[in-house]
Length: 424
Image (cartoon, rainbow, N blue to C red; front, top):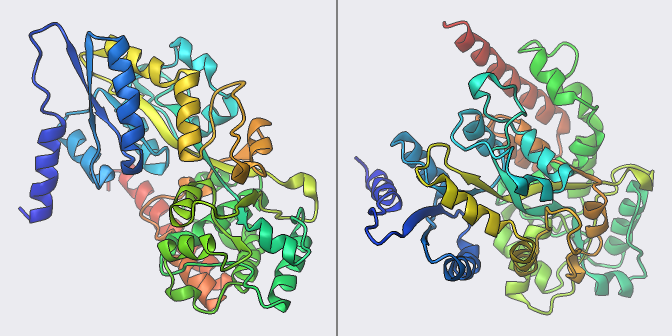
């Protein structure tokens, strides 16, 4: 066994090793995936335990949560309560019926339906004869938003208004470039940083039902394909990255956060999740935000939003009632609001107070009004090297090759899936 596997196995034992209590106190194993939020959840747990002395909550946070949770699942040691990023990996676990069905819990009625739908679209358990979408296997606790961050001081100094259409966005980039200001700070040493533009441009311009149609046609890709339906959006992504600083291929995400905090560019192609990291470099950094203006109709603007933190209960936990009490507490308005303010996220609750962070002011109205769409990259199987293909595209500028390669990768996965279903 390698050192890494030993470490993971040891972690799994530690995570699942809560001894039975003989003092009448139930101990919940709480798997919490965000290392930067350990302090927030420590405070939340302390307040919960003070009000619920018959329950003890042990928070477990590990450096590689994706590996740790899969190791626990292999050992059939699902934690009592979990937080996970609600992405494609979560969808796989939900469809595998790892998590409890929360559909009948009253707390579900407190959640913004548009946000809950983003969770449902990733898949649910269909045990007991149910249909996909019937169960609710996760509740959204905190949402993020992907848009464009900008430096209001640089915009004002160059007499540039916040763009509301695609042509205005390109005109703004031209103005900054003509004035010797880098329009965008880009960080292609980290391949994933090409993803936010992909989900915004592709998500807005893709035909309705694109991924459903793509999955339905198998490996042939006769009617719909990325080459047929993503040509405009990917040409626009290449155009945006042509306005990056000269060394964008060698700079990483951390360098980008630091550079934007220091005023190195007018705009930054990142979302709300980057704000805490930017402020860690400069607490007084001027930050504004706006949704991607993808077309020349300002009314087409939407915000791409994902559930940054989802809450689940292990399907077979022996402490279901206590776990539900803890989840109900986590989902209470005061707890959710305090977390959103501390982590620059958005509340998923109905009638929530808007986040007062000025950096989010350009995105908050779209979130409150439900003008949001999910991350389309969550629809693409993890076995497809999407971010690496995107990285090559924005560096080379060849969107047609990217689309051909993405079609090829999708087709291969679809063919393998069909073969497995046929038992070959």
